[in-house]
Amino acid sequence: MKINKKYKGILFSCIAAVLISVPIAFFMVIINVGFTKDFFKAFINSSLVGIAISIPLANVAIPLTEKIVGKLIENEEKIKS
Image: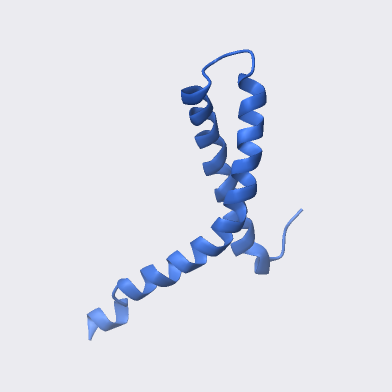
């Protein structure tokens, strides 16, 4: 199954958000709870909250960051002239 390329940015942001949120949740639960009998429940809850927060943020932050970086980096054409 292939997804239409017009959804590339949204898909990229969502996957990036999940790949960042889940490991962060894992380590934060280790730090705050440790490996107790409630670890798995706390990890799942923390991951779901992290994903729910990070997906919308990533869909705003990633395009905004690309625009900011694009303005800060010299255009290759300007360098050659």
